[in-house]
Image 1 (cartoon, rainbow, N blue to C red):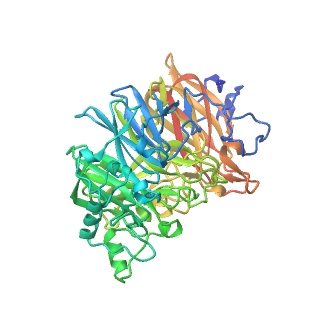
Image 2 (image 1 turned 90 degrees about the vertical axis):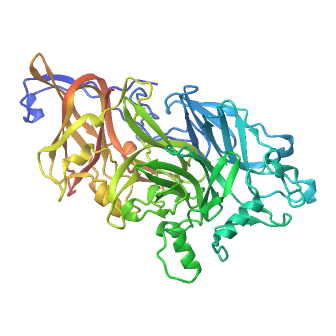
Length: 616
């Protein structure tokens, strides 16, 4: 990979607030521009620039390194030193840093009884420390069986498999060794591999007493299979409560709801604890029940706009609350995305969050963000770098946002924001700095350099003026604007951009001198407020008791870093989270000063965020 470097000339004798141009300094700039990813379907040449290039010591991007859908990323660094990404199709990838991925191949060894099976969906792997064993949970469509006179098997057969290593081979568990199988109802060869006893499952749902008839069902049984049949269940998510150490299993009662149960062990559900946790298009299961009984209730507008589906659940515990995150819509549609719901216990009652609480956690603005399509079916990973926890989300997106041609895995950072909930109480909610499309600061795992923006102690305006109610603090608050319509009530309150109404200068102060090697300026999510130039970027330090300044004269927005080319419409669209950036040889920096120029004809030029890459 070619090293892209911005060389900056050393300045002396400049007053702290003097216009940098007055220093009479010659500058040499080689700006780190890059192009969007191409998969062979996009316009190959834009402005005669080369294909993407960036310094991967300092930056990362969502290349199609992990091909596949429905990713579960397992942090197995304590055991093997690697992260593992498992995707639909029983393929896995491994990485030491979540940026450089290698294909490991297949990890499942199916028995002869399942030869010819299809639809190997959404495997999730968990490590049980007590048993020192890995469990994989997944679904597949089994082959036709002679016991059914050649009739097709159920659409989805729930299964679990075990292995002593994260790379497998994983061997499916023969459930007939765990429980008694009613062969008069389930005579097929594949019946013994069903993790969920469909008869017990249906009894538990009936006991719950929820209606499920009508146009939108939250519970489906495959017909034509002796008596009870098989309940349609996909996207299994095993979960261990970090405090109680109790085991749970969650899944989609496809298509319309998420369900959960407490597990006695990883192969034995406690059906007395079974519960339906969500109902598509309703904020709560209680609202769904009211609506089925003819009452008027508020529905979730985004779910009304998307295909009828709740799937891909994942559970995360934070500050005593349980966050159930799941996908909505159809995976092959642009509007596929992730919602979040909250409860006080792992089995609810859960409430989907509202617009003002960032209910849509990850999405492409229901199709408005043309650079990304179908961001969904996810998992979370918690990093601890130098004592600082960082939460990441791994999710899939379409390879080509213009048309569905398959999926790959992407990563973005998650931030916690305290909001006022619908009852006026404080509530922490997730915010994703994404879905990202362009180059981002490296996660820094195993690297000397990483994102050190958390070292900023003050961001302030030193010259110029801001848009109404603006504050320079938002420059380095870690929150990047990506949405426009979908989360407007939330973004407008909590995810601020810094808008300059005239050409304005800002100063960022670090908590001491840090070796800095890169800087990135995120543009506005609003086309009319996008800056076109950041100029006079000064890196201020002190040498031998005197102030020294290193200068980058200007960073210009290039349409290939701020706009996405749509082959479908032969048009450029602004990239949410688009940026300009530069890297250079290490400079010891205490302060950074820069100027935002308001383009002619614009009322505002806004910066969403500034990121600093330096020595950790």
